Image (cartoon, rainbow, N blue to C red):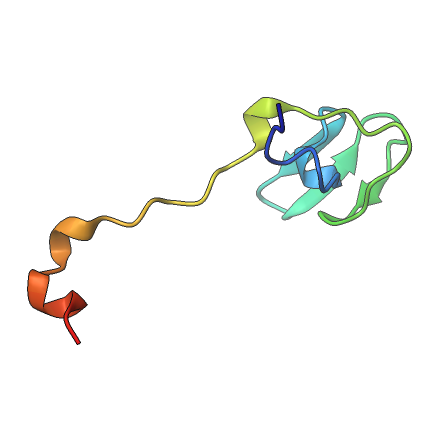
Length: 69
């Protein structure tokens, strides 16, 4: 089974990363240094609770005529 988010490891999804909203920084708890969202090291460990799926489109706001050619 493929879990979304594990195919592209990055610090934003790592369990060792801590996001500070006031500074908009990601800190690594292992190295105690600032890192970027797209970086990933060998000690990457996926945290399922940090993955935010894309929002689903609500088709209720569209009419039948919107989909006709």
